[in-house]
Image (tube, rainbow, N blue to C red; front, side, top):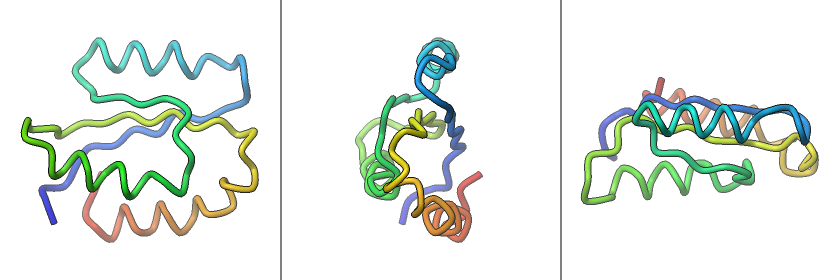
Length: 86
């Protein structure tokens, strides 16, 4: 396991400004991905930790329209916290 990451999750309905927020975070040095399904978050974190460059801050945009994926959010959040991510 790699070093703990600073992770910001931006969520909301379509048209709520998630993409604008993600772009602002990217402008401030965050490695960002928009519209990531909840079930892929831990895999994405693993990839960031194994990447050659030092990725220490990531921001994730999650669309609330993916309700069937969103039901897994509590488990994914618990897993991120257990791994020491902030």
